[in-house]
Length: 331
Image (cartoon, rainbow, N blue to C red; front, side, top):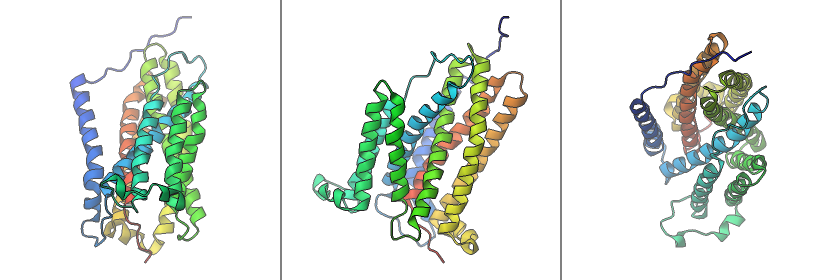
């Protein structure tokens, strides 16, 4: 029986799409540049040296994780779709993302080697000292992990890159909670789950949409099935992100001070901005799921899902800013 034809959704004019992309890139670039001073304005907190640069580098690290792990995750989902044209896959971005991760982690390691200051020349850095401090060893671990991930992405079994990428996430979770903190292992565990779920949510959706765009003419039913399969798992990822995010917030902001610190501290203001973005993402995700369930053409869910992944990109940038700001004081 011949397959019913489905008309692919009409895209916006290329000029409008290009302008929209440029605007979003400009907004994403302005967050690391202007975000720290805007968040710290009027709080009485001091800005650490190089905060905009560190925010940018951590944005690149998080984005590299999203692209690589999301690609591996979406490929596994696609293999579970009956009749999926697996021979037609989007071009892999893993190698480029790994290279970006290497450059970004080298930049962060140089900051650690300078005593968490911005290096102005090579003599400012104590490279050998990286092996003598916890933060230095974690920074080197991230650099080496991205190098191994690059080699894996170029090998016959690119899925093996998941292991070094998992090491980067573990290193980030440990770095965010030094031993001087109360119950650091609990905090690291929460961050590990939060970051892993966030990376799979954002990166997985990006690759699913790239695949759906490739399949929407030749295999629209399979594309809709892939998006539906992703949506079911994404609901659990969102639940895990919400629970771990709330728990992490309460660890750093006692319940009685949360409302005040959300407006009076740079960390709280940025956290509030991230929360609003996540709510917007959840609304767009719900709209995409409703279209996926009720529309005659499942590919019609592509447009709201694309808005979801764009908003998730902004969440990644704001999350990077959050790691560079001073932690709130436990009142």
